[in-house]
Length: 103
Image (tube, rainbow, N blue to C red; front, side, top):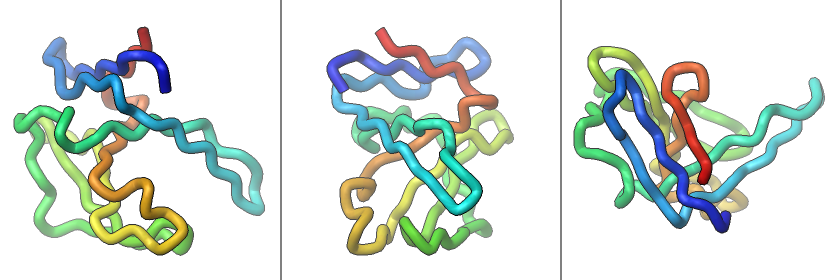
């Protein structure tokens, strides 16, 4: 991605990156909206890991989650599957829980 991506919630910047990637996904039910993944190094330490929640995606692997001000706002694939290794050390934010700006 050739743009700077900024993520904010409650008026506070949670991430800023010039190295974000866009992931487009499809399933048997159709296409999902593209998701912007930001390198963990470009994400604020204000995020709190959710200790008791993980999920599994058969395409990407095991996901962990992060909160900000008590609200779940992001996820990351700590142990991505072989075909999804590009997502290792990247975080994605829920578009309906944070403001994601490309510019």
